Image (cartoon, rainbow, N blue to C red):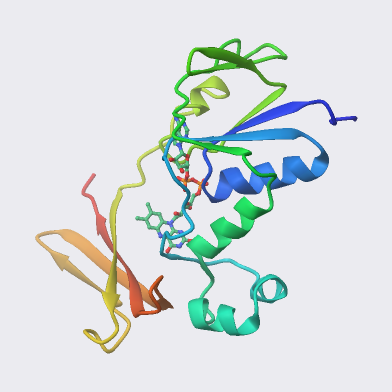
Length: 200
Ligand SMILES: Cc1cc2nc3c(=O)[nH]c(=O)nc-3n(C[C@H](O)[C@H](O)[C@H](O)COP(=O)(O)OP(=O)(O)OC[C@H]3O[C@@H](n4cnc5c(N)ncnc54)[C@H](O)[C@@H]3O)c2cc1C
């Protein structure tokens, strides 16, 4: 299929959106990414696991990988920046919140941006767990998993061991877990989660 003149829109410029945009761009699509936030995420902290560290070391100097990530995955901001730089300049339009797709079942779906109607050959919804775009492609509604989750970062100076454990209080089970990682300012931190199992 010749995709050279086909236009693709990706809604959401986080990891999923920029990954899709890079693939489409390499296939030859003309890609535009629309992101509701007004700026990029190169400074966002947090470690993403399930990353091929060897592949990463072919992209970033080994020393940088060790400093920022250790053996625990990928610093979100670095991955975001790498994916962002993989796209042609100005492909990502920040501060654009897409709430509606017009003619979603046609071959030329439309999004309206600042009063202009823009036609695309393909629209990808990469707008996260609370997607507004999902309803244009599926009737499926995500089911609540029964857990509430908080995330936080703690200094390793304050807690000398991984903050892992569980306890049941008043019939509600709380679980914590955490792994070490290096923050944006090179601080040594625990990336922690507290999970609260909600009663049915
Ligand atoms: C508190 C918390 C901690 C986490 N910690 C980790 C961790 O340590 N390690 C890990 O691997 N994963 C972690 N995750 C999960 C990880 O963040 C997600 O799996 C990942 O971000 C999903 O990427 P995504 O691109 O699918 O969606 P998202 O990252 O949710 O991105 C969706 C993007 O779409 C944009 N958007 C939404 N609506 C619109 C719209 N209408 N118009 C335009 N743009 C829109 C949003 O602004 C956002 O940039 C965590 C998640 C949370 C909530």
